[in-house]
Image (cartoon, rainbow, N blue to C red):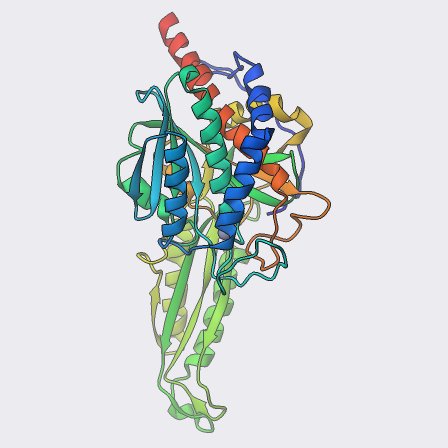
Amino acid sequence: MAFAKWISSFLLVLCLFEPTFILSDLSITSKFLEEANKPEVFNWMVGIRRKLHEYPELLYEEFKTSQLVRQELDDLNIPYNCSVAGTGVIGYVGTMKEPFVALRADMDGLPIHELVEWEHRSKIDGKMHACGHDAHTAVLLGASKILKAHEKELQGTVVLVFQPAEEGGAGARKVLDTGLLDKVKAIFGLHVAPGVPVGVVGSRAGDFMAGSGTFEAEIEGQGGHAAQPHLAIDPVVAASTVILSLQHLISREADPEDLQVVTVTKLEGSNAFNVIPDTVKIGGTFRAFSTIKKLKERIEEVIVKQAAVSKCNATVNFFDKEKPLYPAVYNNKNLYAHYNSVAAQMLGPLRVVEAPQVTVSEDFAFYQEELPGLFFFLGIMNDTHGQEPVHSPYFEIAEDAFPYGAALHASLATTYLSDVLGEVKNLRDEL
Ligand SMILES: [Zn+2]
Ligand SMILES: [Zn+2]
C-alpha cells in the first residue's frame, strides 16, 4: 500500500449545499494532537496495541479483543452496544442526540505466523496482526479518550465503531445490518500505510481502493489414459484456454485507464503423470472499481463458454455468502475536502498527500454504499519500522504514528459536527 505519487491536493469547490468547510476553531486539531502525545494517552494506546498484538484473533472470533475494548470503554465511562455483528462494539460520546458521526476501527488478525522477533510478538502460532488492525483499535480508543475529555464541547454524538471481520468476512456489512448506524450522517476510517513516513497521511476523492471478489470454477470433462486423449475429454487443456481467455478481460476489454485485475492463483488437476482427470479446479481473485459487478458476470461467462468450446461443463462459485463481493472504497468529495482541511491544519499541507488508486480492498466500502464516508492512509514508517507491506509475516509498525491517528479521528468527528453540519444548517437558515 505504498503511495506512488505524492501530490498535494487542496482544490476545494464551493457551491450551495456542498460548502467548503473552513474550521471555525483552528486550535482543536493542534490541541487534540498535543493531548494524544501526552504519556497517559500515547503510552496507554501503545500498551493496548501490544496486548492485542500478542493475542490476535481471526474474523468473527475477536472475543478477547472485544472484551478488552469493552473494558477500556467501561473505564472511560463510555456507554456502548456489544455483540454487534458477533464480537463488535459500538460506543457513544457526546450529547447522545443527533447529529451522529461515526469513526470506525477493525479488530481482526490474519492466519499468518509472525516472524518478527520482538518482545510483543504474537503468542498464537499461525495468527498475527499483520494488517495493523490492532493499531486501528488502539488508535480509535485513543480518540475515544480524547473525545470523552471534550464531551461537553461536542455538538452531537460520535459513534465509535469497533467492527469484526474485515479480512474477507464483510464485518462492515453485518454491522450495517444491525441498523445501529441508520442515523449516522458520515463515517471516517483509517488504515496504517507501510512505506509512508509517520506524520504523513494520504487519501483521494472518489474511487480510492478497488472492490474485490473471489471465484472458483470446476471444469468437468471425462478422464482417461494420458496415452489415449482422443478417448477422453481433457479438462486440463480446457482449463488452460479458460485461464488465457480470462487474461483477455483485462488486456482487451478493460479501459486501460480504469484499474482492473483478474488473477488465477489456483489450479488443481490429476495427481498422476499418466491420467487425464475427470475435473480440474481453478480459482482466483478479481479487482475493479465501478465495473466490479460487470467483471464478475464476464468471468462466469468466459469460464462456462470457453470450457464448452473444449466440450467440458463448468460451474463457477463466487462464495457469495462466505466471501461476499467487496465494493470499491469511494470517498465522498465533501468529506474529502473536510479531511484535507483538518489534516493540513494538523500536519501541515505538505504532509497531506493525494494517494493513488490501489487494487487492495477494504470492507469500509460497505459503509460508503449506505452513507457518505472518507477513508485515509496513516503513515507508519520511521527509520527502523514500517517498511514491510501489510500481510507480511515481517510487518511492523512505528507506534509513534498513533497520536496522529487518534488526533485526526477525534478532530475529524468533532469538527464535522460543529463545522460541516453547522455550515449546512447555516446555509439552509439563510435561504
Ligand atoms: Zn488486510
Ligand atoms: Zn487491513
